[in-house]
Image (cartoon, rainbow, N blue to C red):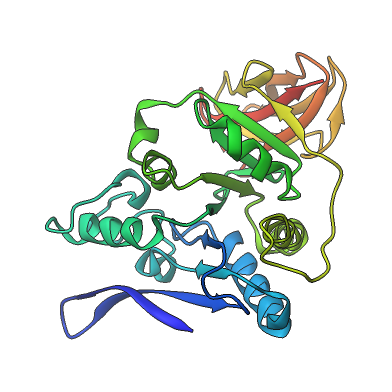
Length: 307
């Protein structure tokens, strides 16, 4: 059943409406999980996951014995405009939680979303990389929330579980606000385009069904990938550009690379020369790689999970 989570009037007779699709099985009082995506308008991989999960659950509703709330578009204006933040306000929605019901539009939207999700047995926030970086599927967990969330992440068919120290900005995210209110929440990220969303996103859907099965809310079939690699944060190498130019990859994201292997080149199109040869400082999984070629000093080029 499609339900309205938030609605607000906009200028010239338009409106902002955020909806969810609530699917209930044989036990409407059974476990409840929330699948959230569309936080940023330029991250669209979660849209496929929402579609595929709703399709699977609708076709086999007799196997569902709990409640699944799917929020496909928390930022519908951003999706329409392909804007990372909320258009006109130029605000990142995932930097406004817990929000304020009496505040401006984005603060009121954040408060309504949070209130609607609080109390779920689990929440999965699905994001994708932007146009600049391609990443393998990964679950991101803040230290301090590793207990139940690590177990949830191990079921989701991601290739990497990455436990990270929280930064100041993370305290205003939906995941942080929900965990603070005792609603177990983690973030899943994956490659940026729809092609990779169909591939890795289909496995995430299978992982969500595995999670429902473990919660005794799904009796249908599930498929599992091998256990993900796990990082506690101290074995991830982040590689940045040292020179401006055009980045030409020489390795593939998702590849297991060797120490000293050339990952890519930063070249100067004006002088026809190589400005930087990016070599792997260690062996491991190349789980993030620059996709947009124009770079400046400090631009993220790659991340490696050390083997």
